[in-house]
Image (cartoon, rainbow, N blue to C red; front, side, top):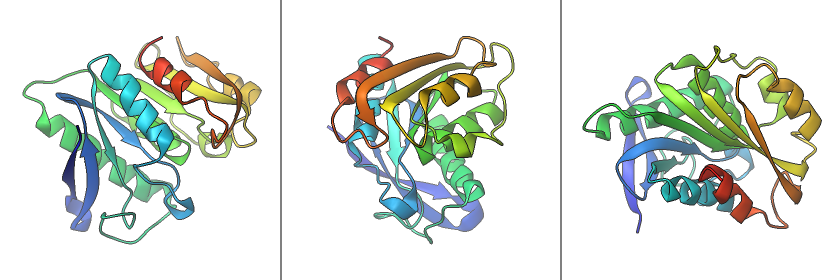
Amino acid sequence: MTKQVRIPVPADGIELEGRVGVTPLSAVVAPPHPLYGGHLSNPVVGALCEGLARRGIGALAFNWRGVGASAGQRSGDPGVAAADYAAALAYVKASAASPLPWVAAGYSFGAATALSVAASDPSVREAVVVAPPIAMLASAPRFGAGACRVTVIAAAHDDFAPIEELRAAFAGVEGARIVIVEGADHFFSSGGLEVIAAAAGGV
């Protein structure tokens, strides 16, 4: 069973639409690009939430501003996306009775945003991302040694996030794990959701 929530973004005076499943919350899952249909109901977002739940990790999935019931204007600006993600993470932190190992997760545009926020927030100890576009990783902050456990779930036939380029991008991240979804492309239209859920679940 899931519950709808409202996530304040105080600096901009808006609220975002969110959905939570199991509790306590300790993870945020971001959807794909808001200008190209990215929505919290995306099946890959659902697979990430399901996989995290298998480990007892409650996840908050949210819609970017201007998407669904989220207020504000849609934007593809990475800085705006980071502000939305940070607001969702603040909501998760505020919902916990005590500090937990926070987890940043996302798919495509949301994956790149999750990595950026995780790298700038030392309280985030794990990142689980699906198909982060290489073009968005060029200027992404780097993780310090042992600062964050990173799992990258990659489609075998992804023009936006080619496997070899992902391997090179994460070669300097200590302990980074890359899980390949065979037969899938960037949109996972041919399947692979169970592989994503299993990887998010730690398998």
